Length: 468
Image (tube, rainbow, N blue to C red; front, side, top):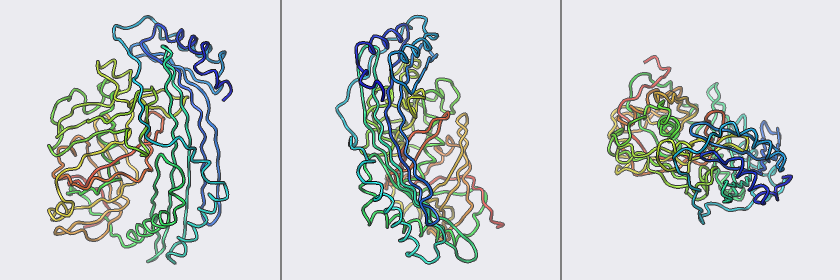
């Protein structure tokens, strides 16, 4: 980055200190990141992209007001211009004392640049090998799409006191989508995995072959699926990726800004019972190599494990520095931003429901009639009331305590707040998602993780297409 060596210099520290003087909080955030993506589709390499993303963001915070300016050019002149822009929020300190984040010696992932681990030709060969193997694996395969992507982000944060904090974040992902044709119809299976590590795992043959097999199996299951029944149903959620429902329908409602503004269904319910006593939910940004983890958040606060719901009781929200200050509490290390061009806000990291005490097989056996949702596709949620609509991309009927016929077209409709009350059993088979999640909020996307054990929910509206 032009002028990157200026970071931490006396001139920069002086400019930042003067710019934020009179504010309650603020920082200089400098980012230098690179990313690449390869898409192999329909037997050809469809696209390759490589991007460099460099710049800074200067923020001043006063009460609930934020002054923010960013630029792709890092120089003293650009910094001074940004300082003039944020000056409008300043009118003297509030009565709340703000301290700098504590430093951390924990390192949750390697500093290695994943983009340099393999050369261009090796990456293309990998995609070609996956494509060929998939087409040879099952003669019903009609389409194969493979996406390999990686990024390497370096951030530096300067507080007005002169405190400097930094992090280097690798991130990789491999996705495989396979379409089968049979019985005069086509169905697609989509899988993937990734995290904060290098490309090495993707080049292990048994790993990518396993992904191909899972995608083919998912598509094969859907070829034999019958229309989903509609109406009120007992729903059993599988472990792992179905935690996306927890993330969307419950997690967002536990972010500090929504509760400070009193627009969340969980507003003013602190220390109240909001779920079955078997339910404990936490957000944990400290899990090594996970997609949603980070050593420090984008305000410089070390990541941490925050219990949100403990044995059914709401005990904490996820906070950034501004909302924590305004709510008279501490940051939980959840201040995140998409890039230097975006302001930080409370965001989830890895949001997880803790293990319960029930064997997942016993949970299925306890269900005379219902639906088992193994994998989810897209969904929508209204933060103000927690109402959601999610589509199940792989689901099955449960009859007489056994998983039976696969179904398609099932959508789960309900309220996250009500679902918490309807959780009857929590399994002991906690599983994390495969490392492919991205969360959107206010136009910003950040990598996240989810996890949960098998759950039994007593009563959830299912939208289906069955005439029976």
